[in-house]
Image (cartoon, rainbow, N blue to C red; front, top):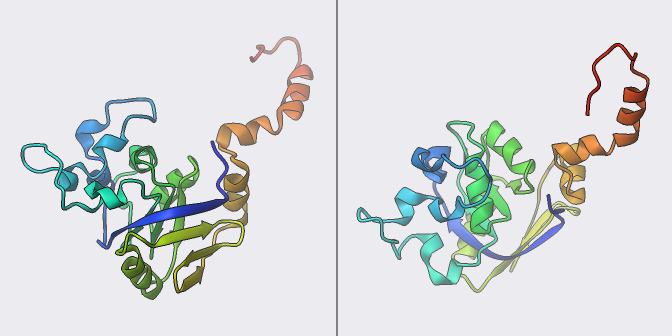
Length: 200
């Protein structure tokens, strides 16, 4: 995965609480096994009308937010089922960070495994940042190394555990973490008794 260091760009405000994974990516779009191609179905029931046409009033359909890289949203984001497709669809749409007062635990874990940065700020900070993001001329900067979020007239710090931060900064998913120990794994395999099956 790509390293995550500093994210700079437009932030889209979506101030709704308890947005669950079925709202992020409805179940009828979960037939793909690869991680790509889900962005067009992001928030499908909110982004489209009854005829399936794009609703121009939905925040991510508005042209001024077409290139947003940050989503500012409400508490308990990503609740519901543990489907990995939810962070896949957010990332595939073009988002690189989600800022909320709280996240569902499994959703947050699924985000960090693909390089989508979940940032927890307190309710008051998210309220102020939502107001700032409501003006699309404002840019937001999320600095993972410094653990800060900055916007015009706004600075806030966020917490992230050291291991997750290390993985994101260095672009290490679970496979890459395993490959960091390639020499030790190879040495172990060479020392296996010959009567045991060979692994490749």
